[in-house]
Length: 474
Length: 99
Image (tube, rainbow over all chains, first blue to last red):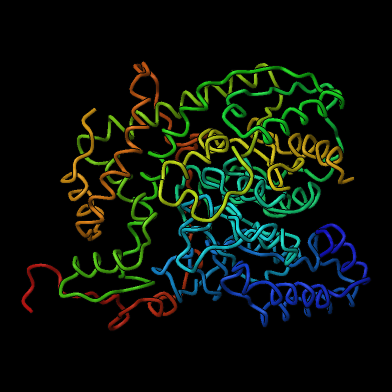
C-alpha cells in the first residue's frame, strides 16, 4: 500500500479513487488474514459505502479531509457504532456498541475509511497477542514469531501492508512494543492528548490511544487528526490538537539528547548496538549527547504491575452478565455473575484481576497499591530531573527482537519484563515513540525509543525523522 | 512481607467473583506470589513523606454545564442486555427472595 500521505494526496487530487484504494486493502486482507489472524472483523460493506461517498464528494470538488481515502485498522477495544467489538474476549463476543469512540468519529471526519477490527491480547493485557480468545496473531515478517502486543493485530495489519495506518492503545507499551517487533513507527501520546471516550478501559490513568504507521510523517498526520480536547473524556487536556506535521523536518540540531543506561542495559547485544548507532546519528545531526542514569525507571515495572491490575480489577467489574455481553445463567444473581466471569475471561485477565483485587484489598492496600502510587511519584520526579539535563531521552523500546510463540507464556513474570523500557512513560503520562532502526537476530527489526516531556510530540517526531532518514527511509 | 498463601488467593477469587479450581488455585498462588515478590523491591525504599500519584496530570473537578443533552436511546441500551423485562434489565433471583 502507498503511505498515508501519498494515499490522501492521490484521493483528494482525484488521481486514485477511495474505492480503488479500499479494494487493494481488502484484497491484501483476504490474501493473508487466514494465515496471520490479523482482523477479527472486516466491514467490507460499510467501508465500501464510506469510500464511495468520499469519491462522490471529491468529484463535487469538496475537500474531504487530511486522511482522504486512507484505509485504517482499529484495535478491537475501540468502539465503532454497530460493528462487533470484542476486546478479544469471549465476555464481549457478539456485542455491537451503540456509539463510536471519539477517535473513530475524528478519523471518519478526516476522510479515513475504517476497514475492520484487529486482534489483541484480551482486554489489552499482554505483550504478544497470544492472550487473545480468538487465537494469536502471527508476525508478518516471520510467522514463527509473535507480533508483540497488546496491539499485535494493528501492528501486523500495517506490517503486512493490509492498511497504511492502524490505531492501537498503549497502557504499558502496547503500541510501541509491537511497533518495534514489526518494524513500524508507534506513538504513545501525552496522557490526555487523545480522547479515551469509546476505548474500553484497561487501566484508566495509563491508557492512551495512538497510531502505528510505516513513516514518521504518516504517524504525525494521524495523531493531528485524533488529538485535541474532547468534552466526553474528563481527563482530556483542555487544548486543541497540536501542529505536528509542520515540525517533522525540524531536526535535532542544538537539542540535548539524554542516553539513559536504564533504558538500554539488559537488552540483547543487537538491540544495544542499534541504540548506540542511533546515538551517533543524532550527534552527527547536531544534538548534544548527555549520558544519564535513572535507576527509578527499573522500579517502574513493580509499580506498574500493581497499579495497572488494580485499575483493571475495578474497570472489569462491569462485566457481570447484567447489561451487555455474555451471561451464563445460574440460580441466583451472584452465582450468575461468577459463572459469567469465570467462563468469559481468559487466564491472563483473571490473573490481573486477582492481582489487582489483592493489591486493593483490606490489609494489603498500603503495602502494595499505596506503595506503588508513591513509586509512581518517584518515577515522575526522576523524569523531571532528567528533562532538566536533556530535551529528549533515548533508549531501546524492547529488550529483544520479536520472540517465538510460546517462549514466555508459561512464565508471566518473563512476559511482564518485556515491558520494562516502555512502562516509565505510561506512569509519567508523557509521550514516547518507537522508531525502527536497523535489524538484529534473524534479520528482524529493532526499535529504538525517543521519550520527551508532556506535549513534546512535535520534538519527538523531528528526532524520529532524523533516525528514519539515517536508517535509509528518506 | 508475608508471602502469598493459597487461602488468600481463594479469598481474592471470591471478592473478584471468579470460580477457581484446585489446580488453578495452586498455579495462581505460585504465579501471583512471584509478581508480589518482585514488587517487594519497593519495600526497600524509604517512601516516608512521598506523596502518592493516582493520576499523571492531576486534573480535578472537571464539570460541564448543567444542561440537558442527548444520550443513548433507552430501547437501544436495553436491546443489548442478555435478558430484559418491561424495558428493564432482568437478573436471576436476588438473595433472600422467595423463589
